[in-house]
Length: 383
Image (tube, rainbow, N blue to C red; front, side, top):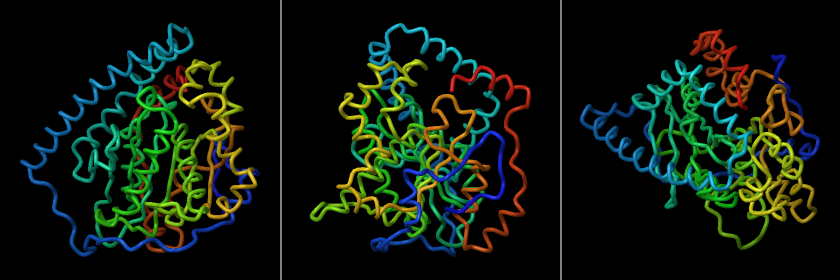
């Protein structure tokens, strides 16, 4: 695994010893033939005002329907959580945290809802929450590398829009981003989440060329709970491919690399930790479909199984990151050391001298929130 050159004091990146056998493997095979590609010489026209008004109207209707669904599911979730002081105090802390960072949230929300470079709620399946958002680079001078991103949220509050800042910043570096939504608990359990994410990845692999993406340069990325879910989806797909006769809609060979951000990959080691932080044992086991299912949804345990050795050999390169000051998911669950964004961009653009030259001249990203508010938010962060 390539070693980053720049470091940060609060970020730790290293090769996972349990996955060391995986890191040396690169993509195998070629992608299936895609139906068509958008012309690289002609940028797609920006939507007209009536079209944008209709699109925004559809978004409002979709948001209203989701608000009703989320409200109904919230009451159902309350029955699981009960009146526990830990999760209640963290909920209050989350509200205060959001208020302090509101200036940044509002700027990102404006981009999310009004930018012509964002395609919101593209349908990829027939289940609730089977939607993804696409963040498109402004220029269309050829097929773009693609990051399929799965957000976190403790398997309970994940939502595709949480990836809008990452989508915006990567799109500014000529990298297309697809933020995949999935059913949260109690709307679904872990097997539903893995199934949704796998279907979202399949959509990206088979359709991204129509939006100007390069089907030969697709990278999978997950954060926190999303890192766990996407790792499960990737490993499950490799297991399917290693068995003859399984019908597949996408292949792990289509994924150039996997980036795991602040993920937990051994659930047996995390039950007590989550319980101490308010995600109580009974609720967590309900999400994971019982204690007996924990090994099945623990990639770190799964790859040790001799019966899946052939599947492990199919996996793409795996790169894991973790902040040492991350309390919600302990850093010893896996980890890395580097400025994550710059490393990921450099990795994706490796071999593209022109893109690397543009990256080196890119202006520093603007701060979205004043330093004082950032420090205060850090003090009360529930994460």
